[in-house]
Amino acid sequence: MISYDRLWITMKEKGVSQYDLYTKYNVNRSQLDRLRHNKNVHVNTIDKLCNILHCNVEDIMEHFDDDNTF
Image 1 (cartoon, rainbow, N blue to C red):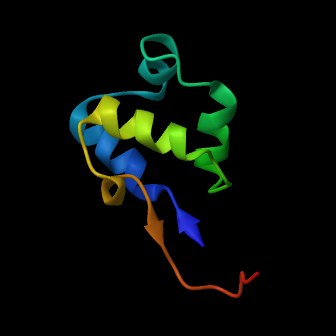
Image 2: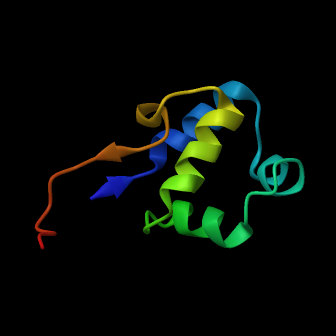
Image 3: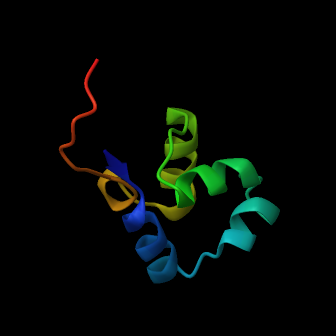
């Protein structure tokens, strides 16, 4: 399972709000909703967030083992 809990911590540390993401940086609100609910998002979204927040992928997301297999 992928968790985006680290994203919200990083945003707080960097002083960036969800409002900033969709007004200043044009991050789609539906993508933010998907992140809030730990659903699948495009890699481009993760890349964009890393560029906005000047951080690494591990500052945004974390993997936990689960029974999700192919």
